[in-house]
Amino acid sequence: MDWSTEFVEGLAVADPVLQLNDLHKNFGGLVVTDGVTLDIGFGELHAVIGPNGAGKTTLINQISGLLAPTAGTINFRGTDVTDLPADKRAKLGLARSFQITSVLPRFSALENVALAVQARNQTSYRFFGRADHEQPVNDAANAALAEVGLADRGQTLAAHLSHGEKRSLELAIAIAMEPKLLLLDEPMAGTGHEESARLVSVLKRLKGRFSMLLVEHDMTAVFALADRISVLTYGRILASGTPDAVRADPRVIAAYLGEEME
Amino acid sequence: MTQTLAASSVLPSQQTDRANALPVAIFLILALVPFGAAFGPESYVLGLFTRVMVFAVAALALDFICGYGGLVSFGHAAFVGIGAYAVGIIGAHGVTEMLVSLPVALLAGAIFAYLTGTVCLRTKSVYFIMITLAFGQMAYFIAGSLAPYGGDDGLTVRLRSTLLGFPILQNDRTFYYFVLLSLLVVYFAFRTIVYSRFGRVLRGARENATRMATLGFDVFSFQRVGYVIAGAVGGLSGFLLANATEFVSPAYMSWQRSGELIIMILLGGLGTLHGAIVGAAAYLLIEETLGGITEQWKLIFGPLLVLIVLFARGGLLGLVDRIRGRPGRG
Image 1 (cartoon, rainbow over the protein chains, first blue to last red):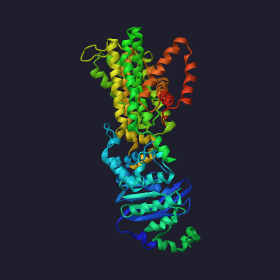
Image 2: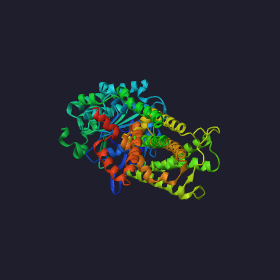
Image 3: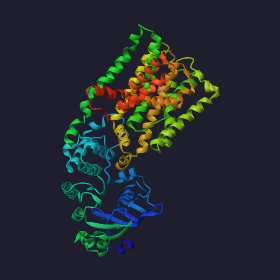
Image 4: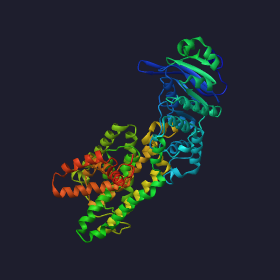
C-alpha cells in the first residue's frame, strides 16, 4: 500500500491485525487525532509514545469503540469495525486496559476476571445455576490471575486491592478475554519502580502470545518491550519504526525524547 | 493493610448460612400470620398482610433492577397498574379465569417494559429516572382516560380470578396463601437470577457499564431483559392487587406509588431482595399504625425515613447487621 512508503522503514507488515487508515477525531474545533495511519502486525508489540495531550488515549478509545472517529476507518482482522460498538469489537477479539483503573470495585478479583471469561464462553443469557460455581470459568480466571501474579488475591474485593494490584488486575482481565489484540493504555501508570519492573516482565512473557498496542510513558519499559514504536504528537504520527530507528530520529529527539534518551 | 481488608471482606459462600436465617424467618412469620389472625380481627389482619405481600412482590422486582441493576426506575407502579388493569378489563368482559388473566397481566407488564425500556435504557442516571417517571405518568393518564373502564373512577373487579372455573381465591385465607406462594416463587426466582450468569452481567453493569461493554457484553440488551423481567413481575403484583382490592384504579400507577416502592426498598435495604419484603412490610405497617394515630402521619414518617437513610445506610437490614456487629453492606 502506497501510504506506508512515507513512513520510516519497517512499518508495512504483511499480516496486520489492526489497520488504522487516516483516522481523524475532532472535539468541536479541537483536533485530537489528525490523520493517523498505522498498522499492527500479528504477534507484534507496538508502542505508542508521546507527550501528554498527544491524543494517545483518544486513539485507544477509538480503536476499542468507546469513541467514534470523525473520519477514517479502523480495520480489525480484515473487518471494518469503524461503526461497530465496543462490545462487538470485544467479541471479535479486541481487549483493552484502562489508564484510570476500570474494574468492578464490589466484585472480587476472581469475579472481575471470570466475567471476562464468561463473556467469551457460551451465552450469558442463563438465568439458572450460580455463575460463581462454574469451575471451568473459574479455572481460566485463576490462570489469568496467576499470570499477573495475583494468584492468591482472587477472593479479595477489587476495591480493596492496592493500586499496583489493580493495575495487574486490569491486565488479567484483558488477557482472560484471550484477545487477538491487546490495547494497553499506560498499564504502568502510577506504579512504583518495583511494580513497574514486575509488569514489564509480565508483558515480556505475554509478548508473542498476543498482538499488543502499548501506550506508555515509562520509556525504559517501552524500549525494553516494543518491536516497533510510533511517536504521536498533536494527534499526528511523527515517526514510526524500530526502537533504534525511533531513538535516533532527530525529529523525535527534538519533539519528545530530548535529553531523556542521551 | 490490604491483607487485613481482604480478611474483612466476607465471601458469599461463608455468608450463606447467616444470610438465609432472615429470609427463612420472614417467610415463616408470613406463613403463620393467618393462625395468629384467627385470634383477632381476622379479615383486617389478613387483608393488611396480603397487601404487604402484594407490594413486596412489586418491591422485589424493583429491587432486582434498581438494587442489582443500578437502574432507578421511577415508573415502577405503571407495571403494577397495567397488571391490575389486565385483570379488570378482562374481568369486565366476563373472563375471570386466571389461566387467561395471569399470563395476560404478566405479558402486559413485560411488553410495556420492553417498549419503554427500549427508550429509557438509552439514557443514564437522572435522565433514566425522569424518563421512567414520564412513561409512568403516561400510563397513569391513559388509564384515567379509559372511559369504558371507569376512567378516573376506576372499575370494580366483580369476581376474584378463578382457576379452571373454580373460585379458589374467594376465601380470604386461601387467597392469602396464594399471594404468599407467589411471593415465595418470585423471591426464589430473583435469588436464582441474581447469582446466575445473567445476574452477574446485570450486577457488573451496575458497577461499571463501560468496562462491561469492553468485555464484550451488550449492556443495553442485558438491561432490557432485566427490565422486562421486572415489568412482568410488576404485572404479577398488579394481578394480585386487583384481586386483593377487587378494584382497579389509575391511582395504582401514580408517581406517588412508584415513589413508595422506592422508599420500600430503601427502607428495607437496597440490593438484598428480602430487604424489599421487610421494607414493604415496614412501610405499610408504619402507614397503618401512624395513620391510625393522626391524619398527618407523613409528618412523622418523613423524618423517620430521613433518619434511616442517614444513620442506617443499608436500610433496616443494614441496621440489624450493625447491631449484631457484622460488617455493613456496601
